[in-house]
Length: 336
Image (cartoon, rainbow, N blue to C red):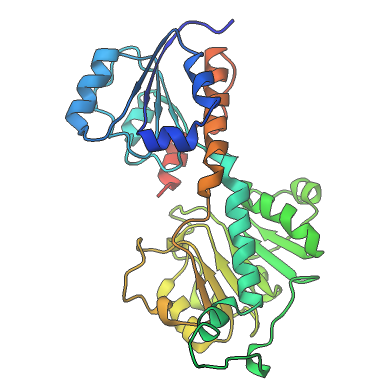
């Protein structure tokens, strides 16, 4: 039987409906003899601190609209289960350093992010951005020509920079197209590469020079900030595709924009150094660039995946079992 504990859920009505549809909310409620659901709409940090102190829960279930935790936490609070991803609007690094246990949605959204990467790959190969404009202009008889020939993904060489959960889901999706896949990441062993049916690239240069499609999925840490330079991007052969659904700041965006304006490769972007993407961004005017607004995952219909993952962790905590997607100070530093 689960050990008794108190659980405070601080979610808006919309977050509750989207992440914890029936029967998930009832299952969360059943985990704790002391359960309270609070809508944080209109609640500032000071009011939240008072609410948190009054309830003094052992476990906090939080989401995007939950205010920042106070510096001094209530004495019983041991675990924060965050339904979403980046935690920097909820906790500080100091909270983790003082021993607060925190999890987030981890790999529960990886397949939808991988799906978005696949979308951008196909959009680049099929010139979707061009046709989305050209064929919707009244009175313009836009049609295929030699400059806008579509290409297939079947049997292409795909390079992936980074090999976390999203990259591994993307590998699974690409199997249907019989792609030869090469990955580059410091932690990829020969055994891991063999298990996923991919090759290990010897260098980052090789990923860009030897593949027709390159997908950027490396985490943003000091060692990777701006690592994708103009020199690397120019290694992609003309007619190739570059996709970034990882972190915007991993790429030198000014260099990428220069290359995008040349039209030598197709580009697909879901993440940017500055978000939201400024209205005057040069990327917005280019027909060879497909853009999505940092919406790779989870899509709204898959929010319950993250809710189910949170429930799984809450249940594991109640039963004193190991948790998944635990956020360490090092992982905290990598989040946006």
